[in-house]
Image (cartoon, rainbow, N blue to C red; front, top):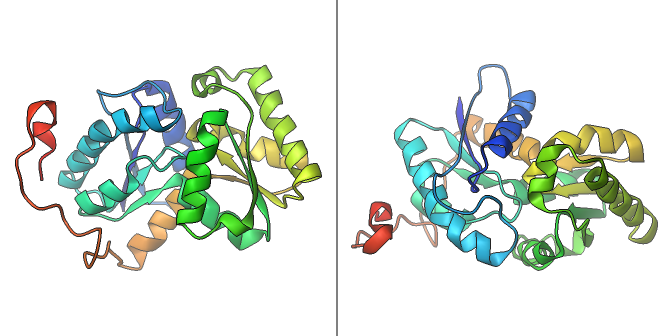
Length: 243
């Protein structure tokens, strides 16, 4: 089985971290193909960055489809471009945010999300409502840690994330935590031990779900909004992305 994991931003060190997290949970025989676009922002922090990340990410998905990917994983917790990717891709597409929420809902009655910056709270809350899981989430918290600070294994950043988990347990009665950034993938086990509750990494959750979808022989339904895009001309810098 070949899983394509796409980091929608252009930071290579984050792609490497994401790939390592994916490989650590993948089944024997699962090949993890990790990619990143050459165009777009170095990190995704809010709606503005998301908009500029999508074209390059869709380009990576198109290339991976041609290379025989069995499923795609979008490794941004905002599930950047997920709906567009499902319409465009031949193989199933799973976002790490949606995957993390679903796994948490299977192991806890109430979970909390701890993300990076406050600007990401509303997009995550929007997704929770869209996925029908808003009632299961006690709160979305932000540690006010820039995404790229996670690349440095910054002790101050780790302390801020840990403090938000403590507050989520104490104030929100959270029974599990979902880490709200792919850049936190290497922190889940340590934070679970520190705080004594399940801590879900969306990358690991998405890999496990993607493997299950492929093993079940399921594909994206084309009877609705995920129908393949109609052929038309795309002009200017977007011409390479026309269906």
